[in-house]
Image (cartoon, rainbow, N blue to C red):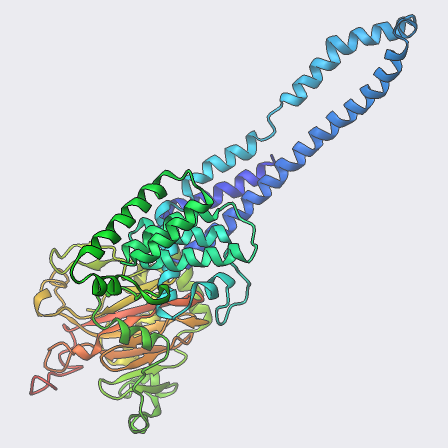
Length: 535
């Protein structure tokens, strides 16, 4: 193997070693895997070239020996009568054939295997595969995509074609099954059967699919269909022990149901028409509203409200820095007032901030309301890092700019947080401020509650990724270089519960944002208190 391949691989190892596991939570970090895989392919191709060269030598030797032995075997004594032929025969068998043996035994794969073994330490884990599968299912639910659409890769705004094979779909269904998610198990196993019936080649067999599918529909309460699928499985594989046991069990359950007084009613409840199953209700009460807003549905931007929204030039309360070059300000919502600013960050500033943030990215956390401890959560799928002004002059420059725009001081604000969303990356509905039962959340900072949020969009997103406010019925779509701003607290200091918001799953694209949370302390004269609780 060439040394430069190993050097490049080790360079990538240095990057990947800082980012072990949870690749699925950041598209930015997943790009490193692309380059690492590219180097592995190069290493593999070099191994193939060496192997082909070795086989070429062996083949040449074989052809040469075939011609020689055909001639010598036709008249062995006559051939050996020539002393040179006798000498060469002895030499070949004593020296040349052992040399060929050494050539055949040469392990030309050693370099490639060494590279692969080292890099395997930084490969995605089972957790990543499960996380990526869950992400596709989340996109499937949020944007109402059927498995066939995802399998064909028919997503809006995509530049590249990508399709799921039978084995890929089977992997999706199996991941759901292993997580006890029988609803998605059924959807994906049915998709596997469709593709198998269409003649697609695969290592996955119908027997394997029916094994998972029959038990999944049983778990969803469809006993009749579970029995039907089990019989179908046994027709394909009569020796399937588990299927045989399940068949007897399902038949026994049906018989017991028939013996009950309300057997007809019970069976009607157990049977689901046409094998259609409802998505289970989960922990999020506003799930339907949240997801409909993510799809751009149910937005309550009525003509009457739209008349109250305006565009203007904003000079930050006549801040000297903005008098000559004010920012373009656009109302996104009237009450609570949410505004968008244009051209807040240049492309160069965005790329620089991404560059310095990327090595520091770590799985984004949430604070457990019961324990106060920071922990990862399935409802927040992204990676984030915190940048100080000393990290780079661009950070200080952006901080000053946000201060000038808002008229609030950044002295008591949190560090600039940079976030990159992963596959189906999201942050489900939440509050930025701490509520009455979470008074100690920011106690260690000594700066009070989060009074306002300034959110910079550092990338365009081809599909999905909106910022939505379920209680308002508002949806704000990312636009690179723009920023949105709102107050989390009323002037009285009470939390504005209307600002509960969410980052919708990214359907297609790579979403980068940065935000600055301004705190109460230091804002007393910049944003004076109101006279009532609702001010």
